[in-house]
Image 1 (cartoon, helix red, strand yellow):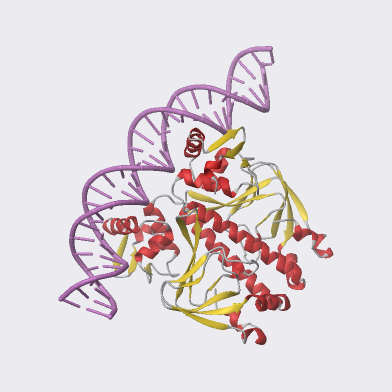
Image 2: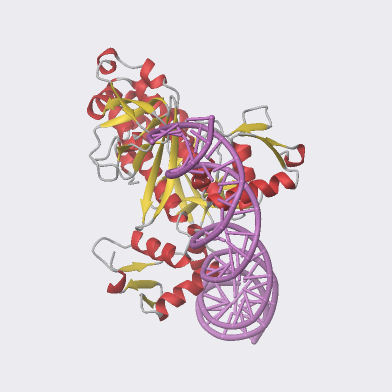
Amino acid sequence: MSILLLESLPENLRSLILTRDLQPGEVLFRHGDPVEAVYVVQSGRLRVVHHIGSDHSVVVLVARTGESLGELALFAETFTCEASAEVPSRVLLYPKHALREALRLHPDLAEDFMRLQARQAMQLRSRLALRAIPSARERILEFLQANLPPGSRTVTLDRLLKDIADDIGLSPEAFYRTLAALQKQGDIVRHGRSIELTNRIAS
Amino acid sequence: MSILLLESLPENLRSLILTRDLQPGEVLFRHGDPVEAVYVVQSGRLRVVHHIGSDHSVVVLVARTGESLGELALFAETFTCEASAEVPSRVLLYPKHALREALRLHPDLAEDFMRLQARQAMQLRSRLALRAIPSARERILEFLQANLPPGSRTVTLDRLLKDIADDIGLSPEAFYRTLAALQKQGDIVRHGRSIELTNRIAS
DNA sequence: CGCATAGTTGACTACGCTCAACCCTGGTGG
DNA sequence: CCACCAGGGTTGAGCGTAGTCAACTATGCG
């Protein structure tokens, strides 16, 4: 989550960290690539997708500034998913072997890492749970509520609507349509890229 | 995954491990319960479900003999999901604080635990990916292939069909129907509780 | 100014869900 | 030993809704 990992890092590891810049759409790693590093987003936004069958895929994670990706592959040989930039981005590279060594030597670091893994897994669960909601209407409301800043009733969408649609497993059309319907029914109010949930929807 | 955790355990922790027996349907922990332990299935089978909204839920994990559950909550205060037995089961209880202490002291143990977490996360991803397949037919085929023992073309279903349907996110009826259709089309052959994939479906 | 891509809306279709009836099995009790 | 019952499994009919295809508008960028 936080860039904590970096700050609490032993000196010798910190010096091994490289960076890489990516253009929108550029791929950081793809399925089958050998795992050489774990990544932290320094700026921008990456998405990790998992492919299945031959023509289906799911968004497994969206990593924003300060968040990490690829840690799941730390103990694997190759990646099983694909990561690409949604916007111009810069990532930090934590070399796999050095990181593993550091995890053995520094219990605090290891504990942070385990926390990180747990958080990631919880996010996966939330994603999975969201998909369990069949109705587009309910799923969108649940998504909006989940993304509400604490104490606020307004969520700001900083991504393309079609990317969000993809993210929550709806076709873009269904997403647009249902947003429009929610607006018309007075459940939400849209001003530009921010959406306000009316009190009728209070969780 | 494996009971590895137990065997490689320091003596003082091993002596703290209790067991608990559960009847089918009996709940091991539910949403909101304080986390006191992490569990390993010694015999039987448990399911972990995550609730969302007020009337939807997903199966997040099915833990069989030797597999663990609840590790994700090791660094949390309360459980965010619910675990119950599908069949008569016995679980081992690893006390939370003792386990965390042990993880700090034994790098090998910590590494095993991180591997375990990674494996769990990958399973979650696979679940998520499965849900991304909209067609019942394809989803079932994918599920069957994923559960094929290596080198074999036959998968044996040791659970109730309706539980499996629930697991993969289909209504029982849709599941039965589609199995029947696959049978009729010659894509699978059923003898009792085992299903053979015909060569036509070779991945 | 023009092109590419996002966003929006309409019409139609397909497929999974729901409800309902029914069979079949195993277990229990009289 | 049979009657009954409960729950899983199976099939049918009909409906609702999300996906698809398509047309069109809006927006940003060269």
